[in-house]
Length: 467
Image 1 (cartoon, rainbow, N blue to C red):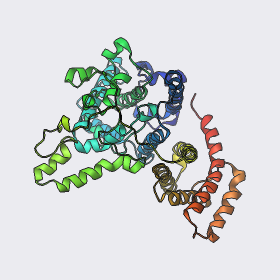
Image 2 (cartoon, rainbow, N blue to C red; image 1 turned 90 degrees about the vertical axis):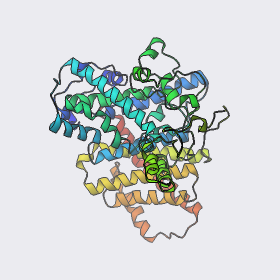
Image 3 (tube, one colour; image 1 turned 135 degrees about the horizontal axis):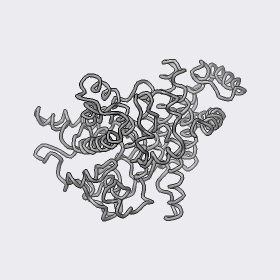
Image 4 (spheres, rainbow, N blue to C red; image 1 turned 180 degrees about the vertical axis):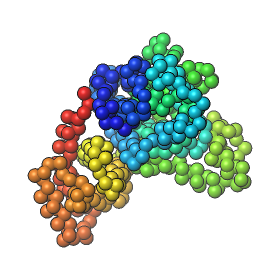
């Protein structure tokens, strides 16, 4: 999925249909992997459009937004983090598949056959079901997947709350397909299976009638995201709910669902959202006596303990009373608006980095990625009201100036270059012995300069290659 020309060949009609797995074999069959469009990248405008549509529909139907600002920002931050590794190398889900195909395939199905296309659709969806199920039943895999379940809201932004480390286990479940299905066909369905799961993360769609028997729907997936006892380890489907019905993991929605982890993590800091369960496994591993018990900590369920069943005891799952209050940021509305502005500017910078990756040096790319991570971390600190949040935000803004000063990042408005040069010189004589209040005002001052850069970035994104 590298060919820029191939990536342009996605019309608006195709873009809408690919979100619902309604593409036809004759328009999505490619001979080589390089010809396969980056459908996920091309779906970015649709992600935004559907989230805005969900917001409007929720206001009309319920008189309130579909979620909270702080939770949505955290979900989007996780989505940004999950994509950063692809700046440096192709997804392991693809590279491992290509390796098996080139060295161990038994036979080759024709890449342009509709039968191959539909067989791959079923194969990828079946592989996803078992990966997803194991991601809930094997503790070390749950350490990655729990990121997606940590949101206490359920809306389209939740779909983007993805794990950085999850793909390092998911590839195993698709690898048997590499024995006979061409990589180009697999790469198409891997993306469509992911895109289909975006729109089912919503509460504004209640029930889809007969489609509920075959397809994974918002109703079925709401159950999967619930922490009610009846919701735990249910409805693992990607596209087809038939796998859950066949293997006994199906559960219909029958009472109000409370979302999130059974033990909420109560933070908006992106690294804690991503990796907190790994640290829990580490401490539990060393605290658990016996070699085989230690292995069980890693490979049995998240609820396992010595003397318990493989998946733990359901009675230990906290009961839902209906009075649960989701964790919310205590930051002021003004500060929340500030974080939204900074996230929007970072997102423009992030998209511009992806668009110009081939032209960037490795050093520049690394520094930009570090700046993106620093921005997301600083936003998390501000929402969590951490004591060092003002200092971190100031350092982030100073780093932006340094990147501009040394050419790793250039203002997209050329006439503003002198502003950044002047501010960079001012840093040399700046007296850093100031209090936290001064630091926050400094960060706001620097952020105004970042805003000038961001306006041009957003204009460029709006007139991008989507057609």
